[in-house]
Image (tube, rainbow, N blue to C red):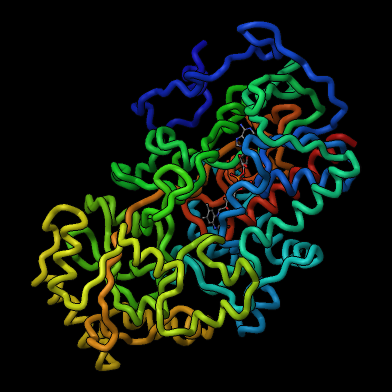
Length: 580
Ligand SMILES: Cc1cc2nc3c(=O)[nH]c(=O)nc-3n(C[C@H](O)[C@H](O)[C@H](O)COP(=O)(O)OP(=O)(O)OC[C@H]3O[C@@H](n4cnc5c(N)ncnc54)[C@H](O)[C@@H]3O)c2cc1C
């Protein structure tokens, strides 16, 4: 049977008209008993209990926890180093009722957080959401109890100013965080990885963990209906082996770098995927582990739910294909579509990602613009990721204090200087000419843009006004971290003393997968009939961060790294229980 036939049987496919893709084209093909169809397979005898596939955050958590419990683990990583996407990440975690929140006067609880989660997720009540819903409750409870003390016990600390990500903007029972919950690890993603890498290294020295980098898993080995090991390919010496163990954990991440897969399963609630979509994840996020597990009989759900962003700019020094960096903007810039029209309220930066993406794709805009000036850029513009926040990543107070300087942060300035997606000018006429030149089309009408900006500026100057964005700025300024780090106040865009004017062309980019392998609360991978596939477990993004879709349709942010920690812990506990 052709692999795509197998897949269309298994995938929960609401879009049967979507084209088939030969996922396995160009890859080696194996029989499930481990023999290479082209010749004999070298079966390496190992004495490990568990094989963990993928050395990102989720895989590291599972490996460290199992080794601490005395299990012998083989950790297989396709790249030359461990860490996965978390190395690049900002290290933001969705946590509930923490000391940091309380110090800022925030009263949070499981009930409030779960209400926000469910309103954002919009679970459909169908079979594919049943486990996801249970995982959502389980994650929120862990985020309010175990997760933060556990991390602190390993030396992880948090930046004291809790950020308010994805804050919604509709009615009180609508999507979004009703309060700040985004806890940035002091040291960002690398700081979060540190204790797990240290633990793995320690257990490696004690021969409890066998770490093999540059080893890609290409297929799972089956034995009597049970997953009994995997076939792996050493990408250095180009040799392949089969290794056996009592249990295999898939922790290979999502599909964000697999454009074919992303386009095929692009959410129906959005219009067509933009042609020139950028990529916000490293190339290794290719969905190979998901497909490998599915080929062995795992059930994949909600694969058409994704968390992609509209605010991407092309990296001036790309590390991966179509490398996108996310612009994190405060409330003071005007967000315009490709024709220079303001997005409707409440679509300001950082408010409702899915709705903004939906708006932009349905208006057919290939890109949008963020319009601000030098003063707003200095106070409000940041970029996501560990690399672009060297102050937090290097845990440097001195660098952090530079955020108060009246000039754009150095990483932003580097993008301004290269001018790839950013244009600046001292007057509106030149700015519009440069915006149109950048896209090669006179899409923006200078007269109309001026009219909108002048109307906004008049109200910003008056201190009153009925523009909903100015109300959002006032609300933000009542929250200390926003006042200190994220708002320039009622700043007029055309203020001559705040120039140059700055326009940033932003494009949609792929980032997180919300669907994945369906798992029960012990991270056992389920089959289409709801029974566990014996011997197989999954953690992290490949498992839709739990249950094949814990987020439903939306994330409250910080739930991805948090989801890796939670599903990784659950997988380790589940395996120990099943083996005892
Ligand atoms: C720039 C950036 C910023 C982010 N910021 C945040 C944030 O602030 N907060 C948040 O919650 N989330 C954030 N995220 C998302 C978060 O980092 C990821 O969702 C999370 O790290 C995924 O972890 P994972 O272990 O499931 O998968 P990954 O990190 O993708 O790790 C999977 C590993 O498996 C390996 N692998 C894949 N296939 C195979 C195979 N066939 N054989 C062997 N190995 C394989 C890969 O090489 C990789 O190392 C960010 C992501 C990026 C890129």
